[in-house]
Amino acid sequence: MEDCSKVKPDEFYKEKLREQYSTWLPVIAGIATREEVEMMTADQLGIACEAANMKIKLFGGGG
Image (cartoon, rainbow, N blue to C red; front, side, top):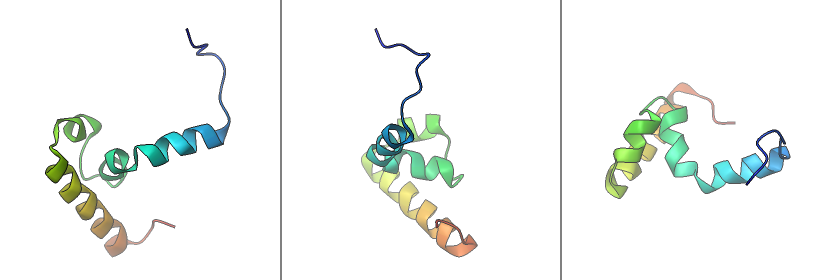
């Protein structure tokens, strides 16, 4: 069993986020909730990601 009291290095969490980027992008951009993303088909998730990218581009941010 994994010890929940130990915090892993930041790079560990950054890599996990990179692995799940398409899942988190619509959530971070406010396009959908995590629960909504979990219910999406692959096509719906792709559209949500594109909408999230458009929102970030239009309103600035992302780096």
